[in-house]
Image (cartoon, rainbow, N blue to C red; front, side):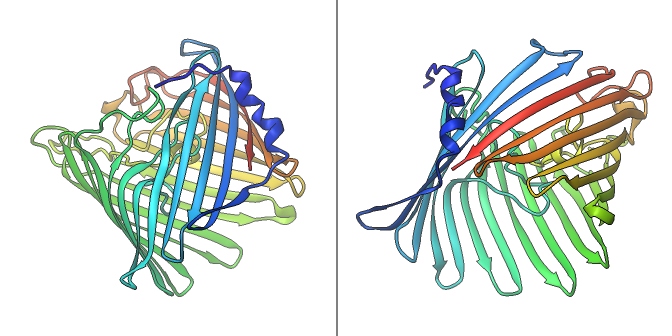
Length: 388
């Protein structure tokens, strides 16, 4: 069911949200009840425009209730409204789950609809940048020990969330796996094993993430390999992905980092050698303009940033994109993207995030994975959010 709601009515939450904090309440039979929420408004424009409008304005509002029934049982409910200027506002259940703590003195059990976020979000992310976000229906078992954490989950992705006021039936789409975290000496280690069933595709992704620090340098390395059945009949999945990064801080808290990311593309073999992304946060890693996904892609990135004061900071990133397998989408060098952004807090509960990005096309004939031709373009956005 969809309701038409004046867009400015949602925007009025900005003024209200700056005056409120998360509210605590009590109810019969409940130890505690907390009410919280958020509102976000974002405007974007792309020049030259490649869509139906030169400017878009999107909004998302969430209202969440967290209840602690007793030491053993807790529950959460989060409703979401999202829409764009001049359109009806869709609403859906973004999260709704209960948790049984320390079940059999071994695990915590979470059942219902919930977000998942693991590691650096290259594989599994709630994709908070999106006005819809991501969540999953199912069950998750979590075992937290002093020296390691282990999650095992059985879920179905919630698809088309928000597009029609709710989720459409997800049929034969499943996402199951385990995620193991342990600190060994000075190195944080994550190991994962995921199974994705999506129509005719039934593949497995196994990988690890390592990160640590050497004096003033932080570093991370992630490697993932896929196998199983691909979406091509009679072909096996055989893709892999690699991400390397190091960062350091110079005088005046100026940060600089170097990154290399690689995801295999389809070669001339009969197997599906292209890495098929799972549920990653591409917007964070493959450029703010979201021109590319993590498949048949190589990215050399330089990242910089520094605080302006206690509340504000800026960042600047440079990406050099190319593709390992030219026959997938034309020539090798895709282009250069420059991202500049500013983040900060407005008062106690509100924040601002704005930026500008420019893409310079590479080799003639290069295209994105969708087949659309690349060209020089500029993208600007401004976002205001409130949490209470």
